[in-house]
Amino acid sequence: MEIQIRTLDRGELPGFRPYLLPAAAQAIEREDPDLVALGAVSGRHSLGAIAARLGESGDAALTDLFVDEAARRQGVGLCLVQALQAALTERGVARLTADYALGEEDLAAMDALLVKAGATTPWLRALSFQADSRDYRDHPLLGVCFTPRYKTPPGIVPFYQLPREALEALETADDIPHILSWALLKDRAVPDLSVAAVREGRVRAYLLAEESVDGGFVLLAAFRREGSLASDFLRLLRELLSRCWYWRGGDFPFYFSAINEHTTELALSLMEERREEREEHICAIFLTPEEDGAQAGSG
Image (cartoon, rainbow, N blue to C red; front, side, top):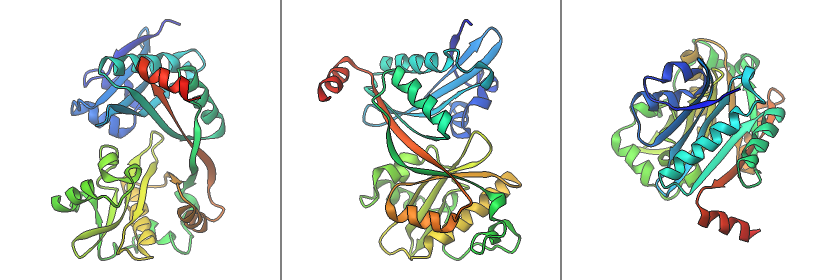
C-alpha cells in the first residue's frame, strides 16, 4: 500500500476529523500555529492522523494518533510518527513526549510503535481507569448526576464562567504541579465541562476534562489547593458527570488516571468494582542529534 502524508488544515479537516480529538479539530479550524497535524492517505482514502502541540520550552506533546482499523498493521502508524518527527525537527523542536492510556492490546501496540520510531522505553506513569455512566445510575453518591434532580452546588463554576483574573491567577500559580496545571492543559480542556470550586474569589480546587475520540470524556487533571474542602472533589465530580451527561445527551464512557496514592484510593472507593483498569504510559523521542547522543550516553 502506498501511503502519502498530508499537512492538515481547514480544507483537509473533513476527511480526517474521525481520527482526531475534538480539541485538535478545533485547533485546526482556528488555524492554531502551535498545533502540528498530519494525515495519511492511500489513493482517495484517509487512513489516520497524528497531531502534536508545541510547548514553550522547545518540546512538543503528542496529542492524537489514530489509524483506521482497516489500515492497521500496514505501517501507517509508523509513517505518521516519522512524518511528525520530520515536521517538528524542521520547527526546531528538540523532544516529542507521549502520554497515553489504552487497553492491553492497544497499549502494547502503541509502546512498540513508538519504540520502533526511536522513543525511550515507555514507563508506567499511573494507573488509568475506564468507567461507563450506565453503571452509575444507581450509585448512592453519583447516581443523582444523571437525573433532573441534580442541582449545581453553590461555589461550583464551569471554567467558561470564571473571571479573567481567576484564570490568569491559575496560569501563574506556583503551588500547582505543572503536569496538572491549567497553563499546560488549557488547550485541551473543554471550558464547558471543566469545573472549579471557588471560594472568596479564588479557585480552591478543579477538574479539567476533554472529549475522547469514542464519544466519551477524559479527566485530564484533578487538584485541590490550600483552602479547599474535603468534599470539593465529590462536588466537582458530580458537576462534571452531569455536564458530560447533558453534553452527550445520554450515556458515555469516562476515562481518568490517578497519579498518587490518595487520588487512587479515592477514585477506587467511588468507582467500586464498576470500572476497567488500564495503565498510562509515558515516553519521549529526542529529535536532535545532540539529544540523541545524550540519551545514548545516559544508559
